[in-house]
Amino acid sequence: MKKITQLQFFLMALLFCMKSYAQQLPLASSSSNPVWYYIQVKGSDGREDLVFTDEGTKVHGRAMLDGVNNPLTVSAQLWRFEDVGDDYFSIINKSSGKKIDVAYDASLSIGYATLSNNPSSKFKLVENTSTEGYYTIQSDIPASGGSSSDIYLHQANTGGSRDYIIMMVGTDYGFGLNSAFTFILYNDYTIEYSNDLHEIWYNIVSGKTGTDSLAVRDNSQAENTPYTLSVEKLQTKNLAQQWKVVKSEATDKVNFINRLTKNYILPRSIADGAYNILQLGAAAEEDYTLAYLGQGQYTIAGVEEDAVTRFLHLSSSDAVPQEYEAKNAKDSDFAWLFKKVSGDHTAINVQEKDILKINVVNGRIFVNTENYTVTTISGVLVQKNAVLPAGVYIVIANGTTIKVLVK
Image 1 (tube, rainbow, N blue to C red):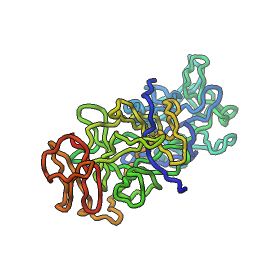
Image 2: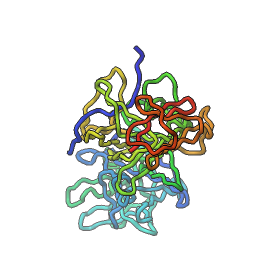
Image 3: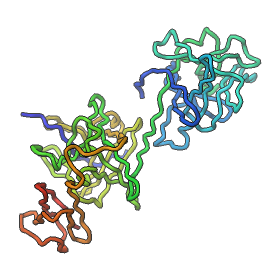
Image 4: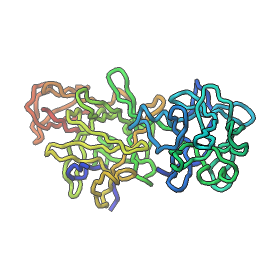
């Protein structure tokens, strides 16, 4: 039997309740065209994966934040590298605009990384010989008052009131794990919402580890598929894979609208064995809730008419559905990425004039073609443009059959 990949809501009650990066040298950039990075230590003994953080006058290592959960504070952890010649850089913070400099703290008996508008020091990146793919950050001068050999930045621990400060060390520590740094390109994962004046289109892609960019597709105009909503290999120019996210004016909930068909993903499903198969429609008053998981991943949940919360879940017809666990949602079948579509794309084998548009207004069904019929769910023909009782109706237009809900 052919394996069919599909999307479904897995039935369950609502539960109340980083790190694989490619090591690379950062790109030099300017204030007019900045490229922002986290500076992350390899680390050991409780210092693993801390990142440089601007804390006013000193730089400390802190746990990595990202812009979705922490839009105001994440900029204190973002840095750009400005070429100042001879393989040296100024390292500049996004939040304060200040540059890393070096100074000496007599009370702690250490040199450390400070922040200045006019620094006296500059830095170069030297391959860390003990940790492949990582780099040591070397100052061109020691801190005034400190040891002349202490020219390497180092992630301190909490001993001696250091509070994970970025301190300066000599060669004995300058090439160990706590002086081994990598540079992680910052991605802004904040979703931009569309409105009547401004449309932003996204591919909704599975965040499950190893799925290799499977994107949500509106299948309502496709042939030989039992599912109106499915996933397939990401094709960025395919309008059936493009969705805009519209936020409710009254709540923080959202709807997803397809670029090709104008269909909404409805938080209503049809039971199919162990699965609940999602439906598409012309409009949706019910909305979805997005919960951020980190590194661009979200869960997508909706409360259906039976008052049960169900989560958008990646599955296949021969797989056993997973149970949702909030603590394990990241990188799982419940995780979704929103990848913004760039450039001006056109439909694949579909012209704009051929796109079927259906709207329900005050009990009337409106279709953007004269060649259509409307029937009840049992097949009884109803008058076009009539005010209809609440219920589910069938619209047949241009060879396409679509269920429409009238409330």
